[in-house]
Image (cartoon, rainbow, N blue to C red; front, side, top):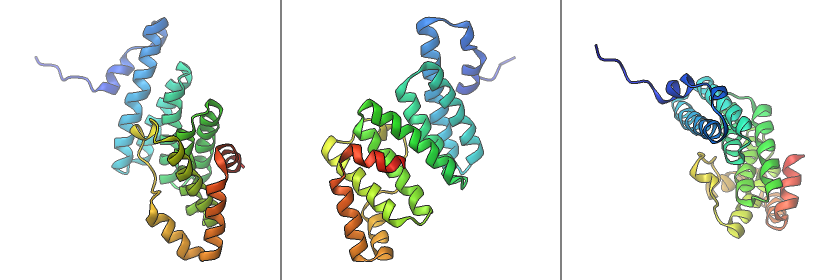
Length: 198
C-alpha cells in the first residue's frame, strides 16, 4: 500500500513546537510562518479570503512566538491584505499600523514605505483622497531615498504606480492634489509614520 505524501502545512502541524527546544523550536516557528504566509498568498490570489486569513493568522502567531521581526512584518502585511479583501477596512488599517509601528521602531524605512502604501490603499477605499496622496507620495519618496529593501520580495504590493496617482488627481483637482503631494515629498520618514499612525 502506497501512502500519500503529506502536504507541507500538514507536515509542519504534525510536529508540536512545544516538543522542540532552542534553535530547533525557532527554526520550526520561522518555517511555519514562512509556509503559512506563502500558502495564504496563494489562497488570497484564488479569492479564498477566509482561508487566507486563517493561514496569515497562523503565520502571525508563529512569528509572535518566535519574536521574529521579519515574520511579523510579512504576516501583518498579508493579514491586512486579506482583511481589506474581505471588506474589513478597520481591521486592515489596524494590522498595517501595527506593522508600520514595528518598522518605524526598527528604523526600517523601506518596510515602513510599503506599509504607507498599504494604508494609502485603505484610504482610497475610504474615499480619503488627500490622505491617500500624502501616504503614496511619502512612500515613494522613502523608497527613492532608501532603496527598495527586502519586504517587497515577500509580499504582493498594493497598487501604487502613476496610474493610481493620476486617478486620485482627477478626482481631487490639481490644486488639492499638488498640495497633498508636496506634503508627502517633504514629510520625511518620521513625520509620515506619525501621520499614518493617527
